[in-house]
Structure formats: structure tokens, C-alpha cells
Length: 98
Image (cartoon, rainbow, N blue to C red; front, side):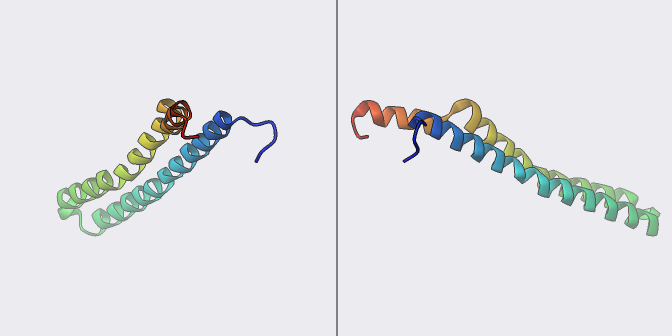
């Protein structure tokens, strides 16, 4: 397939690319939280008496949005440091299935 690249190196490279793609998941929550904070400030400016309700609703929404970024970070850490793909490949190679 690829000349001069071992299967192990190819799998590690794919894991690194996958980790990078998983970290792209942090872009969406960042944009969404910025928009939520902006809309929360606008709402408090229009109705200062509802500040407590607006703030609590905004913070709850931001916490839910942040979970997407955290999941992406966890997947990236698993791909980089646990190396599940390489472990599975080496186990298959030792068992003679590859």
C-alpha cells in the first residue's frame, strides 16, 4: 500500500488525525456559548428585573453545550494516549488473524 511506512506508524497517524478531528468539536460550543452570552446580555438590558431567570437559564444552556466539547476532548485523549486502534491491531497480529 504505502512504501516505507509500517502498519503501526500508519495506525498511529490515523489516530492522531482522528484526535485532531475530534478537537474540532470544540468550535461549535465556543460559538454557541458566545451567542448565548450575547443574547443573555441583550435580554438583561431589555428586562433588568428578570436578570436571575435569564442568567440561570443561560448558564444551564451553556453547561449542556459544553458537554459536546468535553466529549471531543475525551475522545482525542483516548486516541492519543490509550491507543485503542494500535492495541487491537497488535492483538490481531499476535493471534495470527492478520
